[in-house]
Length: 218
Figure 1 (cartoon, rainbow, N blue to C red):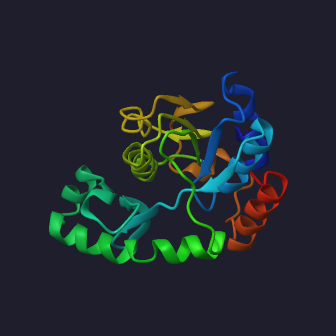
Figure 2 (cartoon, rainbow, N blue to C red; figure 1 turned 30 degrees about the vertical axis):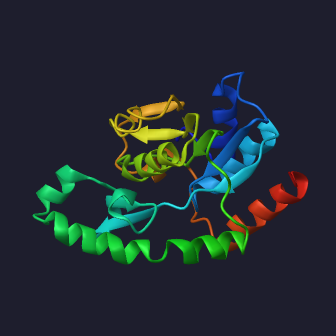
């Protein structure tokens, strides 16, 4: 039996594990697209604002589902690399930077698709809860946490239903706390923790963000 029926069930289990001091003063940021349904549920529970943090995975050549790196912008400091995987693939740092640059160029385009012309949320001085539907390697999530640190977040909590192996180790270096009902899982993929794990479409991301914004105009 899988630990989670679907993302809705995973969100309920995450909510049960949330520390009591998390509340409306936190900003919930979800990693699109799979983290958005879970982030929306947590934001509703906390009566907190919701937005997305756009982090793009740089897939390994021939294995696009494997995170070779993750980017949050176009600068060299906006990339978190999986150095051990890069070395195992025989790729030079320069080749990885070029591959990441191509990925980074699509960041703002994707954010516009999901949020329209709304500006990104103010991070400096905020307490931020970063949410995803699972962690495979930790590369994407670590890039997100690093971006929040550099943007001036005063406290960062990470909430994910499941993490594979020691994927949370690199995240814990910068996050202040981690909420994860199923850490160190031995699955081969995050999807194996779910009985139903469909792809989240752009339309769903847009709808959930718009619905939450309508009920939390502040």
